[in-house]
Image (tube, rainbow, N blue to C red; front, side, top):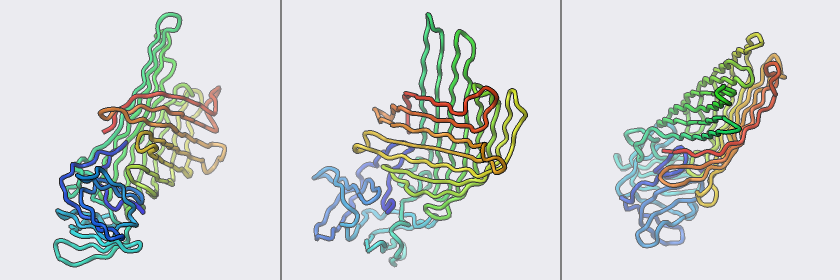
Length: 340
């Protein structure tokens, strides 16, 4: 069961809206509760009350919800309706439409709030993201400078999503550049339903330490958003990619093949710790030995005022690298960042 009432989202964490509504919940055991619905993910709805703080309720225990004032909900990928009451049935919801006074019965999984950035959204912020930075400078016996950074930018609409992310690692030793690795990814997705979408992706990567001058990967993709909640996010994408590579000491390479991407994150310990795992891969259709696989696995620790600390392990594998380059590159990072 996906979001029924999703009133605030961020790229990393949640910011709940102020308690300005007077929503009313009728439970199946006969109890009646009033307050403000501030969040729901999976089977748990959070109701902020003036008499008992925030209550966590199982959705299956709720018979009906009355919104005061009426709330705009998104049905499917495109239809926005003004709703005053919701009656929860077995796997379905009957919506009382404010404009016409009629009722509409839909699958419970098809209901969410309008996405960020739309004029009907409860959260009008269209732009979310995250930036992380790690810096080290040593002097004396070891005169070196190390700079690591990465970013994620996300713009979300009811049936469109724009994403850009990248990372860079720039190291010098006694004034000489010893590492200059970076990658930038840009992607557009169009949602046909609340979960199924298609898109196009373009990625650029340079890895001087592996003698890779530039790798360009482009192509269409098909994705499925299994979860999109505050506590948990999971998507899987399959793509048909064309990859062009230029090296310092090898002829250029190009080819087509299937690619994939998995993104997952899960809050633990009541949103005090977040585990995440992102991976992407590609196999050349004419040469199975040309396997490219990259993964980022780690933990994020929300700090104060939007700052986030994290530890991360990156694995970068190329089945056919440049001459004298290792197939597997492993990097461990400790970072401090900011999310909005």
